Image (cartoon, rainbow, N blue to C red; front, side):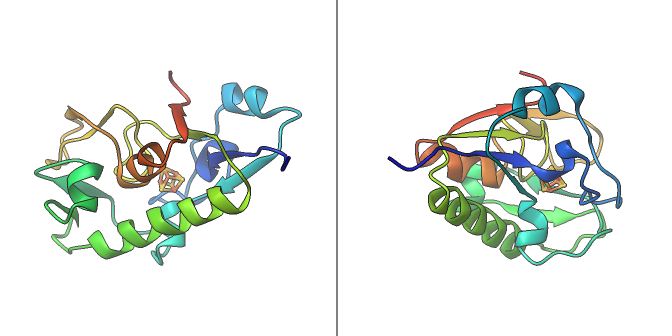
Length: 150
Ligand code: SF4
């Protein structure tokens, strides 16, 4: 049987892939990952976005609607970045399959990585129920998703 690995949002491990060029390092995630095979990923970079980049949020929906082509991801300058987010989700899922990942620890609230709640598209730190685009594709394919918060 192939050894199982865990997908982890790279920013939680200290990689400076966040839109601002910084990271979201989490001691808790570092502890959880100790002794495990970890695959760090940043879906937004995998989708072809540069770092730093403008922050983006899903407008009128969640990752589910984005994957169904019923909602878009727009950055704070009004640029449509949906295609990057979908590509990043697909590439992350490809990596998850390659490494037989059954679980992912993802950054809370992100339009890519958020689990259970994400920002609502108004750039006002307001949350709406739902998953980010990458979290949704992983969940849809049977991968357990959690965040650094819960
Ligand atoms: S939350 Fe996800 S997409 Fe955003 S920087 Fe972290 S790993 Fe990349």
